[in-house]
Amino acid sequence: MSSTFEVETSIPASRMFKAAVLEWHNLGPKIVPEHIKSIDLIHGDGNAGSIRQINFTPALPFPFAKERLDSIDHNNFEVKNTTIEGADIGTKLECYSTHSKFTPTSSGGCIVKVTTTVKILPGVKPGDEEAKAKETITKAIKATEAYLLAHPTVCA
Image (tube, rainbow, N blue to C red; front, side, top):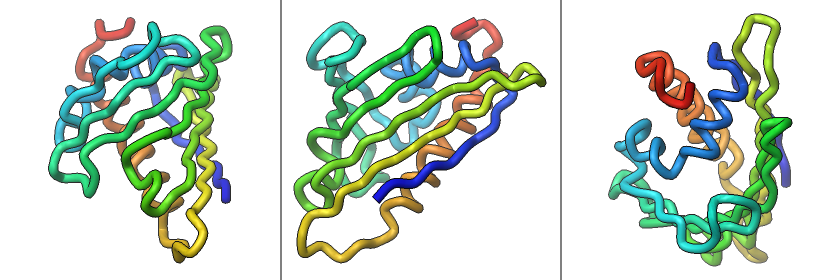
């Protein structure tokens, strides 16, 4: 099952993309420290094919998630990634992926359009995975916006 949603921010697309995608391994633990303990690049150089492990705080029901960066388009501010291990992979979910696109607005900010695709394991009763994903991603985007507004030189 797939779902798409949009989050509008006052941050320019290039800056938001840099913070939320290119520098997330450094900024994520600062922006959402209540959820992210650290992010480690375990394979690659941050480009397509790279794998990073997001280590979570005890506030979340799982200790980590490994995600593969499937594609990244620096010119169009677009990224696709797949969670390959950890989180609910193997217990509830067969796979989980996201496609995010940061589109400039006429007001100087951007709209972050996110499509999540979730495949639930056979025999597992569907829950509110999509709603949880939307809430978590929306909170991270808004927290990133607030952080960048408070720190105008970061990713400028």
